[in-house]
Image 1: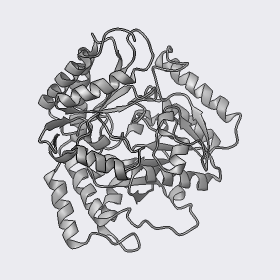
Image 2: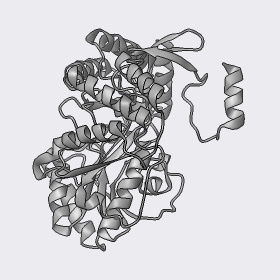
Image 3: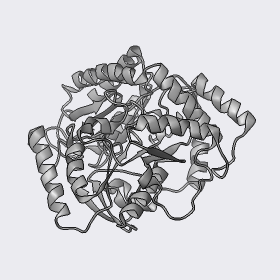
Amino acid sequence: MSSLYDRHRAVIPDWVALYYKDPIEITHGEGRHVWDADGNRYLDFFGGILTTMTAHALPEVTKAVAEQAGRLIHSSTLYLNRPMVELAERIAALSGIPDARVFFTTSGTEANDTALLLATAYRGSQQVLAMRNSYHGRSFSTVGITGNRSWSPTGLSPLQTLYVHGGVRTRGPYAQYTDERFVDACVADLEDLLGQTRDAAALIAEPIQGVGGFTSPPDGLYAAFRRVLDRHGILWISDEVQTGWGRTGDHFWGWQAHDQAGPPDILTFAKGIGNGMSIGGVVARAEIMNCLDANSISTFGGSPVTMAAGLANLAYLQEHDLQGNARRVGGLLIERLRAAAASVEAVREVRGRGLMIGIELTRPGTDEPNPEAASAVLEAAREGGLLIGKGGGHSTTSLRIAPPLSLTVAEAEEGAAILEEALRAVPNRGA
């Protein structure tokens, strides 16, 4: 392993992060488990950053990929592509957006980049509203609108970005308010902001902030925002790269927790739909999607192989009601984790929805971030046979838990027990 690590460091950029003091090489997986090069078996509670959505080595997906690869691997969007059209039809119908058009990309970053292109072209404005603590990708434009310093290496941007309150319920100037007052205060902040700026193109928002530590506002906030945005003609982009496909349990899309004013104008997706294959995309109503007045194609977006994987994966997800499983098993898991964390002073909050759960760690007795504790729990969980993630807008001090949606009750209990032991090793005293 050390030899591969040395080779990695010799050719891969320093800013490509690796987990663990002794990084592991994952060689294969099955179901909700993976194995490393040393033969250690792990329960996977992170799914390749929420990407292995259904299960590792899911037979239905691997069969579809192999069969399509045996016929045709690539053609580009210059030719008719049956799997792409079929998946686009399914996603358009599921999106909730009327007269929807779908454009496929290879990643969530590229999907959000495309959504920003559409919104700014449609509105004739380079001004974008984004949420504090947000993350939307690693391209030049998406880094420029990301509201999380840890993931934004430059202040340069082709866009003018203005940041709005509301993505984090339990921090910031409105944290002490009731949900109703919180929403009212955030709406007033948005109104005030719009009263002092030129016409913005769009508000882009994650219904649950992923890299930000699985934080979210009260249900209905973005519906309240939407009413304000509509008065100004500003578009709403819902970044569903991490919240889509039923992960939150209660809804198929994260925006549906905020649906009182209708669906978003633009929806972006990626990660889970490919179950590990590179699929991203944008859904928008036709007048927005067709507003571009120049030719464009996608060389790799909509690849026949990735589309075959997406079709098989989506079919499996719906036929096995994995959204319902996320709701049921996720509900049990979050309650189990809250009970385990109740006596751990370093745990500030256990939050989440479905199988998208965050545990925020702070220095005991304070609201100060505790990245050392988060790293220690990550390491201890791995030693116990569990893989989890990290995130958060306050010095990467939140644990991120997002298993494949086929997680069983027994596996949820097993993972919770490992996490409980790892959390109890965190000192119950201030630093």
